[in-house]
Image (cartoon, rainbow over all chains, first blue to last red; front, side, top):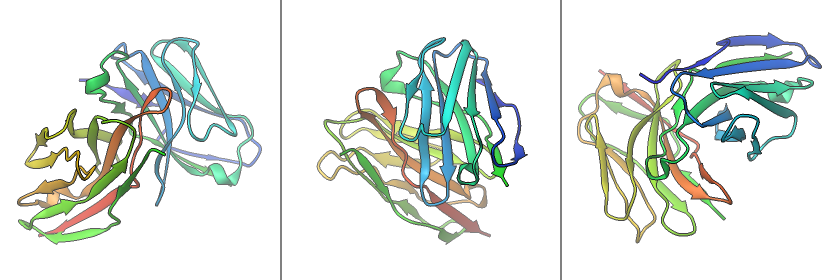
Length: 115
Length: 113
């Protein structure tokens, strides 16, 4: 079974802190994604990566950065956390070339609260 | 522009009732279409998909048909169970310079015994 794991299920941080969210997948997937999920807004893509050291901005990259130093690991960084970044963060991964079968595998999510 | 519209929830049904969750989209061309489901406390998982017009995706008793004429991909199930209680997301695969899933806002389904 494909497994996508996220470092924490719940996280509480203070405004201005630097926050790292880690995601690891075990299926040798090329693509990895970070989304945030908010009530009434669904999932919005923050960043994605299609290869090691490669990254692309999604729809809402402001206030976030990412790092992909190894194929299996994709990190989301909040440089200076703010209260409007309180949200559920979901990581996902997929194969690169399976365009017509574009299944993304999701982690369980990290609920981040910034106070 | 590319967008997806999903019916608002929550949808509240009794066990064995018929379920429809509407989904329509606007896109250039004919995107592949997906339904994802999120059970309480979990991440999303793929429920079913359809890759071309008139295709029917099906899984776990759920079905959805790719309707090119109405740009719709409504999710249906003939007899829901309590265990189907979850949030359902419609997600076309859009080409916006790169291929990406565009998720609807999600529809919460609550099934009571």
